Image (cartoon, rainbow, N blue to C red; front, side, top):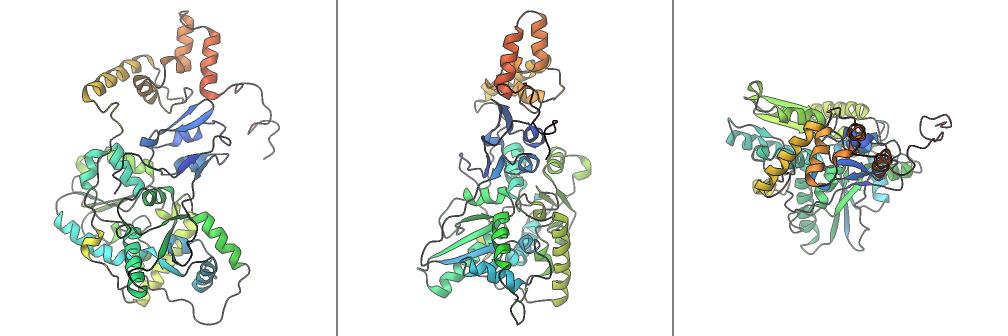
Length: 453
């Protein structure tokens, strides 16, 4: 799990494209965004790469950076695909055609992430049996794990110390390649990711190649578009389709309820960042005391709702559920993986609280008191006109020295009333936040009279 203090985020803001509209600021569940100088800015420690900001950006200024590296010569290339990738395609397109298109892109092998789910599921059952009477939180979603590390550090000990199917499958693949091609075999494993958080987890993974053999990630929307282009020139070949050996449980593992529906005891399955945060804030309430397993996924409908999925999430869920039903009826043998119990265990998940205003406890207490004093003056409207999402976040920014009280437009009026701020100075403050000439008439802006989009 993440141990480095410097975290490499995959969510980036294109300042040239950004119009400073503050849509992202209002939806960010961790209050990691601000508007300054007319552009959205990211507070790195608070960001969990959930991608909610990307969903609402009207000009696509928020992007997920590509982690794909060029193919190395004389290496064996593996495409590691999640089940939701297959759910992006129409059912009349065979697995063989899709696989052939991926091979044509330069890959030598296609492996499905969820082939490790049955192995993980058994180990999770054993883990929960050892933790009987203790609440356990799934470690599947990296955005949720980082959210807990940064915002709910007191719950870190409740996160299951088990790796995700992505890491487990990659470990099996690397061993399989070395077994078949020799210990010195050169290979590259690329995970086709449906979200920024999984890409960030891979980017920040520590350890040697034996423990973290994934070379990098490929954004699913980009990958899907390349496959689709190749499919247009490839006709269906004669012969049987590629055998689908995943169990129904494995197919739906990444969806909401995919884990919890197969766990003994009382389980809750929650999707969406805001819903997850709301539950974590109230996790100690009496009605939640006897929960055995808590499955939290940052995206609506689980990984089917990842921001890099090109197709409708509900159609993807429908496709995977149909596939799961078909595979359950076939009762295929379980995959034989080159793994042991110790291979999927995580030694440590560190607390990384970013809520403390300062690392020095006494200084943090002073800043907290200053924040509370600032809140005495701020109106509590949470209008966002200051460039921060809430009055409390502005008060914290003031305590940290990153803002001043007069950034609040209502405080500006109050200060002007008592002759402590001139109208000209107040206007300069507005421009420092939202950008120069931002209040000038512009009939070409979105929704204005000359906007025909």
